[in-house]
Amino acid sequence: MTTSRSDTRTSARSGAPGARIVVISGPSGVGKSTVRDRLMETGRFVRSISCTTRAPRGQERDGVEYHFLTDAEFERRRDAGEFLEWARVHSSHYYGTPAAPVLEALEGGRHVLLDIDVQGAAQLRLKGFPLLTVFLLPPSLEVLRARLEGRRDTSPEQIERRLRTAQYELSQADRYDLQVVNDDLEGVVAAIMSRLDGTPSGA
Image 1 (spheres, rainbow, N blue to C red):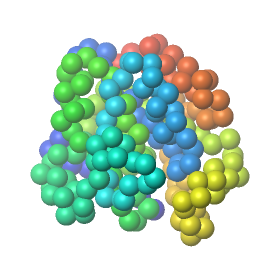
Image 2: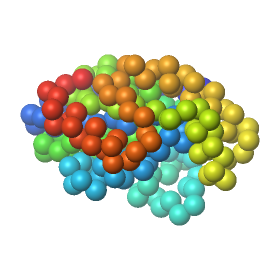
Image 3: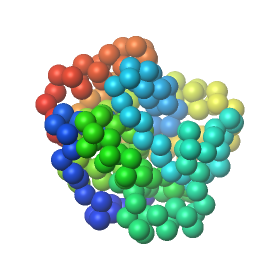
């Protein structure tokens, strides 16, 4: 289960007209990172690098994939109001979005790409940021399970916990502006870019 709270000290700024935060959410294993990386290749976005208290995986580098923090440092930044949103995911690790880079990009007229969970997206909606929210759906729960098992870095217990969390996350999908089944990468990217270019600014 995921728990979080909103930090009301970080509130929306208007930014430049048309600049939006594009939120990508979906259950673990649905392919958010792949979609995010492909969107970045369009040159249309500034990527927000999240902070987390989990350990790096594989070849992940601090300041590239994530800012890796201790629990104490994360909590200090949270309490200082430095995050746009934050959550404790799978009842273990903190994740949060640093506010300053996102606000700077918006004020410079750049779209910002966030890969965050449903709780973080809910916090941003409450704060009134200009959003396009996208929920990535798996073709099926069986496919999602296979993707998680294929990672080979997740224990069976972790897989079951993430699948339980996925059930809750999927129940929140209808709160998003756009829901896309992630079974065709280029089709997903095209759908997101079309919605971004064709929908007026605002959530």
